[in-house]
Length: 269
Image 1: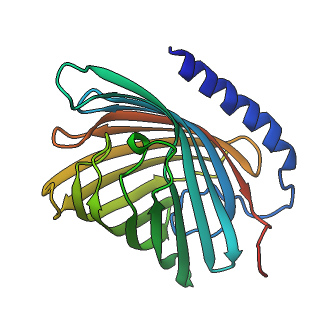
Image 2 (image 1 turned 90 degrees about the vertical axis):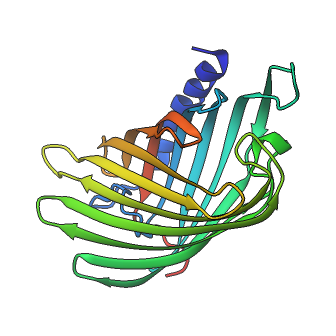
């Protein structure tokens, strides 16, 4: 295990212990945060390790927060502190290392319909070119309109298809993107089992298909699994491995994190 990994794990544990002191204790229905249409306030702190297809390695501490702006509105902010080892494109240069902050992303989501077991939501995600170093970002601004539907079925089953379209023009080349345009359709489906007894936990599978009609002109497929466990009414730990297909830029990744759901916190009542 690298020194970066050890530091990241220490940071994750310390953050979990410190932040958990503000846990909400209201007797409300338990929310795990796995429904993509949910607008409840929450935050995630996670350690990430990614192995890319070109042998680049990515480690980081990922921070993601959902702000419940209103009952039907959610603002999601995300940023990551990254330690990246990547192959320089210049001949005979070998691998280089870079550390710093990633691009910041913000997504505004509106829950347009919620009746019975069905919920429909749509929104817009913006990834801003704010990385502390060019190699740690996407090389430009990305816009991603999104639409999603979720249905809670019998036997604690959740089904939630998510449709996204990502657009960017004239990106600079980075270890995460080729130079040029991105015009990609993304379809993923969250399939989750969320038993409420004897202890609240969840098991999730998320197949993800992406078709890029831009300069790269490629189709990729990734498969993600997730296991999570609520150890209090508002706090959980989770592990999220992902496997990439042969034509994907991602070889494999693992995300291990802590989540706190602040169920009774709303910015504007």
